[in-house]
Length: 133
Image 1: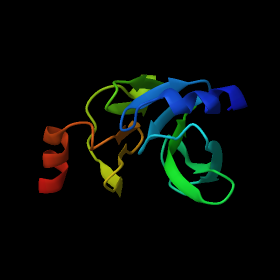
Image 2: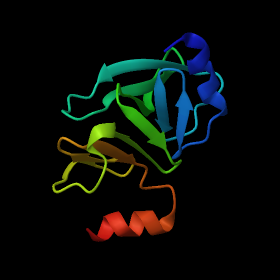
Image 3: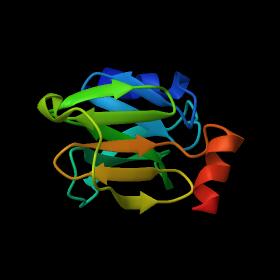
């Protein structure tokens, strides 16, 4: 991802997937103007997304502010979630695996089909669904 795309993160709202060059960003909090955002370590998960942590620093402290998602497969952004999938395997999945379930991100993998990343804080109804499961 180029530096100019990282600078645009200051104007993006949290808890919604935003499309930027090189993928999609999910911020878990707003990024203050005086902080610099950098792409850090890749999360070691086997799915159809490559996921990196986004960190903001002011030179003294470093804070996790979100995630960068990229995929070589077809990806669709619906604001509160993104899905990447094999075009040839469209249809109902027979199996699913929850790979991540946190306050900021739910990642569901459908083996040999696709992967869905969900922002559970997009609205109260979505949060309720995941809290009850």
